Image (cartoon, rainbow, N blue to C red; front, side):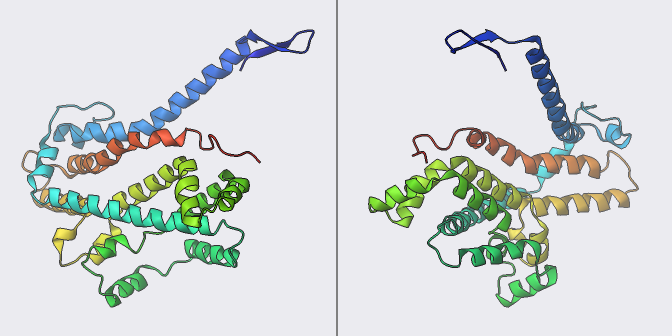
Length: 305
């Protein structure tokens, strides 16, 4: 903020920042630093545990910095030859899930924002009802079984590929971002709905597209409960998160069977931390490539109402 002074002719003249402005700015920076520290603390804690010696982790002496540097947990993770297969499954499922989810969400959001579509309020209501009322785990399992989708790729992709919550966000963004005059001008020039969607709507809504894409990708990447229910016989279709889950459970059972003797097997707490870091790293690497769209403008060159 800057102090503004009016001259005799009524023009504005910027005088400079006052002491109050500096205090407010400093408070904002302090608050942002505290929020950033709160967000980073859990990740740094888990990272430190994953590369610390087991004895220090068992004694609860690891907080923010590793003690007794060790990579034994990561060696155990990569020692399992099926880990890379599970990583491949997770990548394929996440990409297919995100692509199908975005296609359905974009098409539904655009269609249900057009005023000329009859019954759009009823269809929107029916979609939103599914966000509050779900069938439950057992009916979902019976449905997958009746459709012969158990132990297949499709049981990991299709059931959750459309999110009413993401649809609501995108629909509201389309309604508030795209001027009707812009759509009407395109229609007068002979553009069809697919042309309008591909050449006008999508380029002007890149931030929300990137945001919803990230929502779908992160949600699918972190989910393993559906694979736990639907993948029984084909262990080669276990995603990375489920594989790491079984790895941690196996290590925990073996550690308890050995009576908690350190140095014999990797401590489950250290292995859990290593699995969390290993499973989170792909999302952390991919995030910088889409984060710029969260802050950039969306209506450059658009027709104003």
